[in-house]
Length: 271
Ligand code: 2M8
Ligand code: MG
Image (spheres, rainbow, N blue to C red):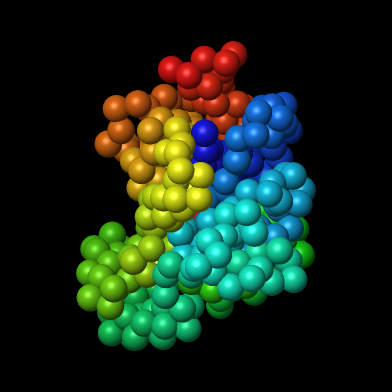
């Protein structure tokens, strides 16, 4: 079995970033040898810190909405990857470089006269105020490699024009929690499929997969697995994946996460 999970608003509380209501389930999955794989908008730098706190250092991770994948040695393929770096990880990039994204954002801002604030242009204090992250965490969130979060401050009509302009450059707009995220062709679903295929190639068996998420940027991931959980959100965003094996949690955040894991994999059942 493999478990893929969004972090903000799913395993972590939307506001406090606390995960204690899910801690028991996390420990149980660890005892059962089920890899819990974070699939998030967060950066590699944020993940390096968080995976220690969450005790997930043996699992791979997907950062920046599918643009960056971190592989521990056990997930590396001798013929495909170099040896891991000093943090024990090989980093694969499935998206485009942040420099290209920022260049194109500048072009479309000028051409459309659009108003938006990319995270890279936000002062640290503003970022702390908007996200509720601690200052050190906000610094890590700004270390983008393959996706740029932004706050949209313009009309819906201009957002459509912006989306079309970006599409011509091979870039995509996807909604997270507080931010819109600009990415390349990568998304959470492609990264999850890539990791599932890697697991199958290395182990010789196809795993049963479960994914949990709360935002529109999770839809591709929820459609790429065998069983899915939509965590009840606090954004009022409609999340409707095309997935027949879908459970919607009653609780929000980490309590909804534990409820969703129990629904599909509770008490030794494999429904
Ligand atoms: C951003 O991501 C969230 C997740 O969906 C959002 O869009 O609201 C990212 O910048 C991430 O790096 C950061 O940790 C998070 C903090 O809330 O915001
Ligand atoms: Mg989320």
